[in-house]
Amino acid sequence: MATLRILVTLGILFASLSSFANVAITAGDCSGALFRMPGMGDGQKALVLTAGHCIGIGSFREQFPADGELFLDHPVDESVIVKKTKNEDGERFGYKKILFASMTGTDLAVLELEATYKQLTDKGYVIHSVAQAAPAPGMIIEFNSYNRNVNSSCEVEKMIPLIKEGPWTWKNFARMKTGDSCRCQHGQSGTAGIEKRSKTIYALLQTMYEGGRPCTLNNPCEVAPKTGATTTGALLQAYAVPTLPLYDCYDKAKARFDFNLGSCKLNFKKNP
Image 1 (cartoon, rainbow, N blue to C red):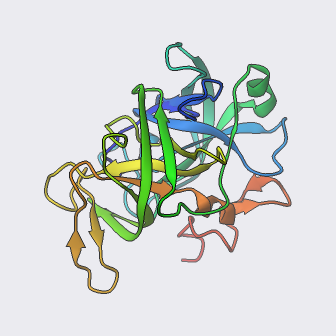
Image 2: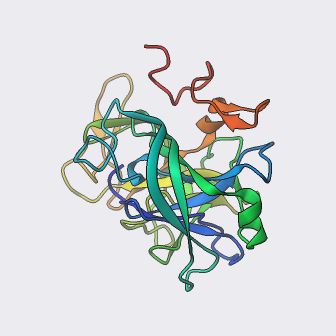
């Protein structure tokens, strides 16, 4: 997690399409994306999707959610900067609620802006959809980060059951194949991974191995589920957190998130 820190340029998009909106997250130093779920209306408050370690609050080093720490409907007074192109200054939008944020088992955050979807689309901002499937090996995902002016085109190499970094353990992350087109850096955390053909979000860029002691901050290790043995990927090996689990926490009938749903696995405290 804590590897690709946080900025707040949420709304990241398709590398080749300037009409997509990107979001820069000002609470930390990360990226993010404007998104909506099926059935959400134009009058609803718009949502931003980013990494859990990008919210700038938490008990771990007073910056990140600690292992076992969960934020639900958490009041804040922050803002993000939304851009249509990388060269523009962008427009600032406030948010007063974190609907969900956690680094326990996952690394996701959902922010609720004060502006509605209609207000954003009237300004020409594009809202992304979240894929209803997990990333698959061989899939090409674009990570287009506006706050770092970096485009990374990455191939999903493998789904990893367990990843450990510092005090956190994450489940079912996507390991990206290393190469010249898939070079990542700090500040890209939370960047939406968009598959070219469907133009939907499959994952968020989350961390990478920097060559230090395995399983420490910024040096994630892969954990064998049965034996507990740990290995590391290649130098600068990047990992992404799938966004599919959000669907199990979404109430389709009410067109809103409900992280207390029985199907929701992101809220690990609902059945203590």
